[in-house]
Image (cartoon, rainbow, N blue to C red; front, side):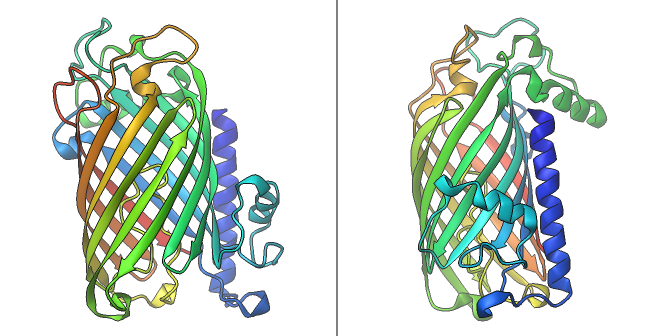
Length: 353
């Protein structure tokens, strides 16, 4: 499972790199008179140490690859061969009737730990040790200021997700104490979820054309699977210079890698732009394997709370092909008896090719 997911991500990355090389050679204009939007790579790192804690959602890393626009020219030779092959075999996930459609591939790991790192025995009143290793494929589909995203994610929760090894390596490199209770982590279990979200953007004028301005992005959707099952809704407010013509600066939600490549700049010539953002999300949670425990085997679990809210804020900086987003998130308690409200930070680096 791990080697297959990693291999697919490497192949997809190579395909996007090939696409980027073609772009550099002057192939921005594809068939039928369409202008090809560049592929984008996002690398995100989440860590609770950014929030002054070391517990709960302890660490996460996600690599996201967003293809050029696939709408109207699925068989165009300007689109990488691997992307075209995957595109043809994902008919069930493909939206129709949109002016812009982007394929998304993700590779991610998340690590979850209780508060007390020193206890080797199971801690009944705190969350289980858990790690998830995931691979995902999906689509963003856009018409004007409307975007919908659908992703299928699958992978594994348990020791095979390598949470203990990754956390121990990081803590030892930093000279920090390691967590002692990983022998009590959830058992290996294959997991999946289908995530779907819909977003609308409301803007005040053409703020992307060199002016200061603001916009607002609303979202609603949900997830279904043994990994997580929930319904969610929220919004993001942004203010700044040359706002990007996309759908948000906070990629924390599973469907949050929603930044369909912007339509209003030449990638290599984009001038400096910056904005601040405030985001919120509310969830009605029916299942979360990292709190409810294994689906088919007895394991440690806690009494999760059905409704969870989250507020985040941060800043995004853009120049040329690069974008950097820094954010901090505050979440309500996720289960009964949780000692602290979760606080963590996120760093996202993006590059268009």
